Length: 208
Image 1 (cartoon, helix red, strand yellow):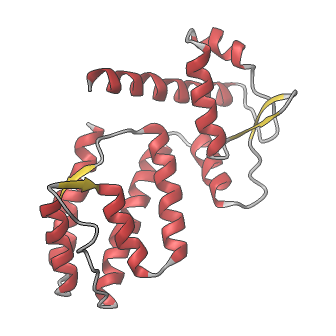
Image 2 (cartoon, rainbow, N blue to C red; image 1 turned 30 degrees about the horizontal axis):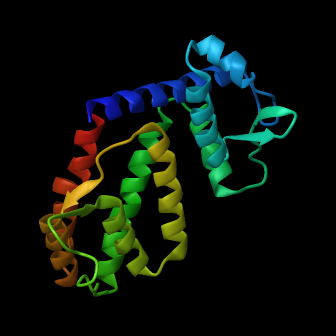
Image 3 (cartoon, rainbow, N blue to C red; image 1 turned 120 degrees about the vertical axis):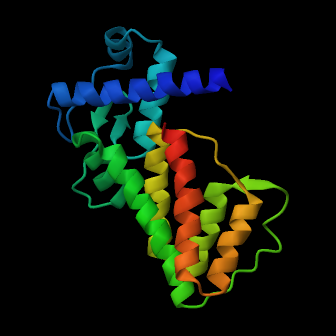
């Protein structure tokens, strides 16, 4: 566990330092990044670590690789959500906090919508055992709202969050059932209280 956390810190540190290089060089969308070898030398880390960080950034639309040419800062003028968020994360200091807070706001909004529409969620087939993935549970809640755009935005934010924060994603079945029970009984106050006291608190503990 400690080794995994150590590797995660190294990975996240490299991501942050590459972002720092983009800021220092004032690179704009379309500008070329230093080569993988140059980045490894500058950061004094292995090329495999740099490659992993660049791969994550490319998946999120932060950078783009052109075969035979190199790696470039991603363009955001295509108005795609991933690219717009990617550029926001690159350019804004402490953007990670904004991503986390926005993701939490969407989760609360989903809970309120479920209660407002009095949507009943059948949990018999997917809530089993003592623990489950928090991500999977919340995704099920958001799916149940029927709001596809909400789900896509939430998933995009979660993907960005995972590039700078890796944590234990397990959550107790007991708390999941308590939250579902409050939703089913149309108890907004209780549902939000459960979310803030446990689901939200779990994220805070992982950040410390």
